[in-house]
Image (cartoon, rainbow, N blue to C red; front, side):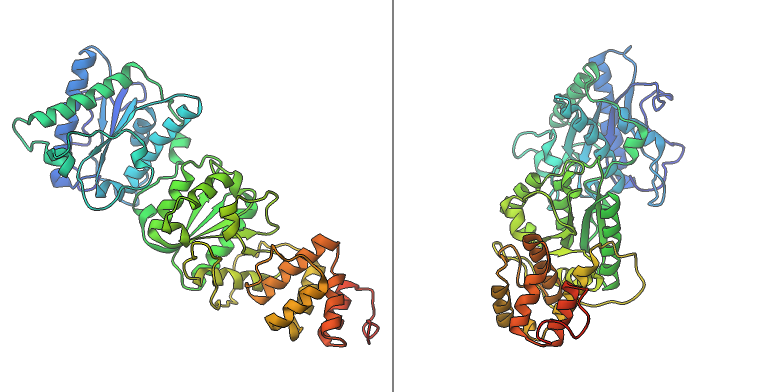
Length: 479
């Protein structure tokens, strides 16, 4: 809803000056986006719908429709009387167009009404109170999730189906039969919603905090979208990840899941449409926040769309308590956390620079980009001995060679089938050390194996001190 305010008018809201007050029934909310000089066609449609609804309900039935015509600047807060109408109206009429799906305000209006429908459906109800109309039909696809709600159609080949309602609304003078047929159909749906109100009114706070599925800010092209939960630890990770990605030169947006988040998979799909890559920070909180579940995400990843090849999950330390479904498990082999911030940053930036995932293969990571400037506090946590173990292993010359590293692993007798051996060396050493601690309760096997591969080496002695810190320097086995 852009453009200067029409002279002498601050609203077009039925014939009742009090119709936008909290107490007056709001029959419908007309949500649209149109150029100012062409807005008269929206006003004509609004007037005709309202007149037809009044005829169906009777002239004494209180209430009116709502259409806002004020200019909204990008910096302006969403005006209370708009969200009052969106959160209270019996139904919404949405005029779909490329401009509509590019409008932050329309995205928020639509999301408020969908949230009301969702709440009704969670209580076992079914409501057909979101009425979608094609205002202008163009080549761009609609955002995922929009066509799940009621869409008004006409006969194939009609002016409406080919080009949209805009081209059937008369600029002035009489209208054609196709137009009046559509007006009567929409008005009847509105009248039914008014006489059988079903969807709940939501609070002003809930209306303010909905997350739109579309709009300029949602669809703005970016390099990377980081998706994480709003739990305290996950939010700290989100800040840390976003900082380092931006410092490396990436344009980054965040998608934050809250307990009220809905349509999360659709939001991720839309994020993939506008971003080169979506990084999901996987944690127990992420998979239990809002409407997100591991099963829901796994099903989305299995739908055959190539877009999902640009979604890269990263497991946050200490990992998940639950086993992941097969498709999600295939691609969730990267983690960050623990005590080593340098290693976590290296992994993150390698993921950011990685090419598309092959459909059945784990990603291959090109070299990362290091950074050293001041930044948000590293959220990683770990036990000091683990870092000392990894520091010692990283000194071992033989472990830098994959073939010799395989001999060392064989000597250790550990089961490393769940470890991705292709990740960078330092993160790999953390994974192997964690596996050893989990399987044996300590790190002695790693030290014993390195003693056999590199006897008397400085790395072997340092590892033995890390594993058995009470041993004085110079008294390790073999010294």
